[in-house]
Image 1 (cartoon, one colour):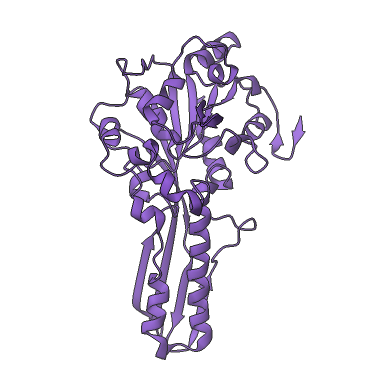
Image 2: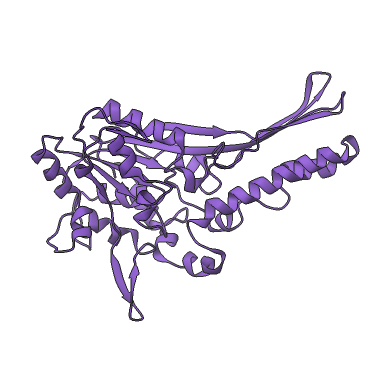
Length: 349
């Protein structure tokens, strides 16, 4: 079988559950941009064993509303097994997928791939050695957890709503040293500032729109993701996670770099990481008190200026599509992230 994603050479029986993040939908994995189950199937993985986690619905003012901002603990309960006639709920259960895999000759433990806060939901589920108030208990059927941009140490509300201040480093430097630069240099600095602002907006767009910021920031899930929350303390405590599971973090690491030279000698060299413009590398790069492996997608827009020759270069600010930037919302379909995921699946199946 040939597809745009590649050749499907053989059927690989590996049970995989996909979990989306805050304020998202199952279509984050299945929509025209991601088409992730199809991508996995094109690389040989049994489509009957690829499931998409569903957060479930609730009634709100007479409307059926998807619970994508609810209590992360309650959402984690849907990973556990319970009797239900709801097909979406059944497809979200870990133990059912494990049994289906065994019936098709596959492993008896599953792989979970989670984006953003979806990783926190899964981690809470895995931490339940005994039942919680929702009746959730982990029963040992997960082999590995691959997380994309998961905020293990939280996302600060203030940084989230305004991650790139107007006095951004490069632009501020241009203003202070304006007498050294011709007008086109300042234009390049402004271009980089504008590009980062656009990427920052795109990174936040999937979480919530400008109109819903205040409301979303008051939801249980968002409060649980704030650094220092009781929820994060619970899942980050020593011994919270089973040690027989492999944990992988795939993160975006977007850095801004400014280099000034005088006759090929550096007089100023500064670099700052903005993570994936939503979650910092510190928050997403490791799990507190648990071993995990890290793959980074590094992008460094860099302004280089030779003061002695009045020459400057603005090195790849990046153009979406032609050169995808590893911002938070792009991690599910970023080519490098997918390369890392395929490599992990091939090494661990």
